[in-house]
Length: 299
Image 1 (cartoon, rainbow, N blue to C red):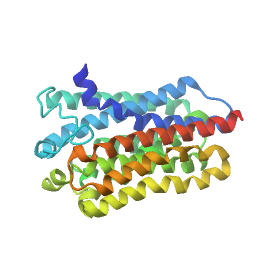
Image 2: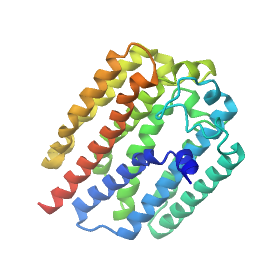
Image 3: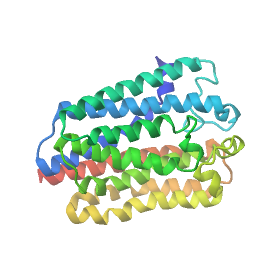
């Protein structure tokens, strides 16, 4: 069981949980109700697709040799390593990935059947295609330098909007506006995790944005990704005065930016405080924004 939890990279499921909760909170702020069963189904479906994506990435990075040539891997980068350490067979990883995608699709199709239109279907298709083909041939989004914005879109705008739609049965701009900081921060999580992967990615032709920009410029872009969410808060603050709550997380952002800009190399040990700090920042910022919309309804 510990091997599979490691393969799923379960601690990173916060990337799925936060935007689902945020979308439901925006819906609650505007309607005063939360359909708990549908919220749990949404959480289950999104987490299943996330798990399938993680497993597929491990399998196809194994095939490309990316994870095999990576000698600078740590808890936050270089994949789960269960294939490289002989803990789980590659074929089992692929089968488990397909099962997770099947579960996520089944839940999505059920929710789509319950709701008007085919919004859940279209959002789900984007998630499935971009998740599976993030490292799978022939598309391999992550190898083409568009993985970072794609992750931001999927684990930000699309999930928040989808969660809101499941609760309300309609589309709106407010969940999109609320989702932008979460999109930027989850892109930053991927970005900082790619820094120690720089040499391995470059060696196998994985042209991530970090590889394309180079380490120094990529470090400055990382700082921008952690700064923009706080500037963006001015927009939802006009709709909801509690939206200033995430400002309390600023020390986490400042500390993580300092670690990356002061780094003298790409050692995962040197960068680990920023890796962990960015994950914590995404979680804390997202939950604070979720609390802001909940308080807006209560108070």
